[in-house]
Image (cartoon, rainbow, N blue to C red; front, side):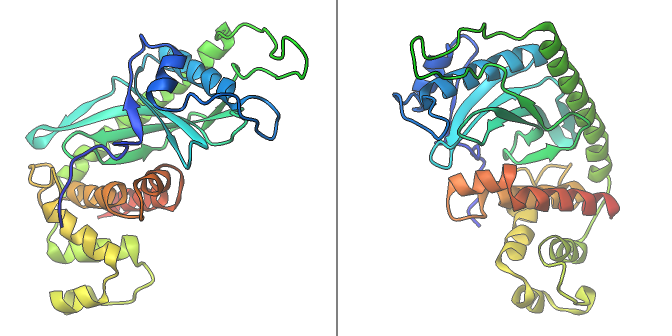
Length: 297
């Protein structure tokens, strides 16, 4: 396996900072289209600008630093990552950073999805962290479009006190969930495993329907029985970036990160599809299953 420790959104998202305007961010991300109609008959370019403005204000209220803006699925999905402060370090200097992902997956840009993530610095593996925060918020910056001048209503585009409090509460719940996850991560680094456990774990994650007594099988037989993703994950357990660290070497934490590594860097035919599946699709559920199985070891 040819290992990589590049960001999963390389070439799809661009780095930005809060000093850029929403228009400048869209231009940098090549998402600054001219007027093009969508089913609601509102200009898509305005929708993207308003959504980026919303992202910026959300991150500001959540005390997150905007880092990246990008598009997926031919720009149907507009997304942005903001860095939180709930970072932690595991054995051997294994740095894990915390983020909030905002995404608009409907062209009307009415609803914003909110996810809290951890990203491992050594390999840029991502894991969605479940929290008590609502998974979406209304895009209050989205203005209605009229067929007559001045075309767009002129309501102010800023968070009121209620929205600001709502965002702060969401961020607090997300940070709490990440803090709880950090404790579980430390527990996983203390759980030692061997190759037999690793094979059994990967079969449970990717091929739970396979009925096999793994301890009685030779490695060659396991390889023949394993699906491609199972073999990739077993290989990643020892060879992916960061797996040499004390936190990951032959531990349950290493097993979890082998799964997140291949989901974020190996599975799916294209980078765009890989990222969509990792954030919004079936592969996000695979990661969750891997985390639950790792805790149960």
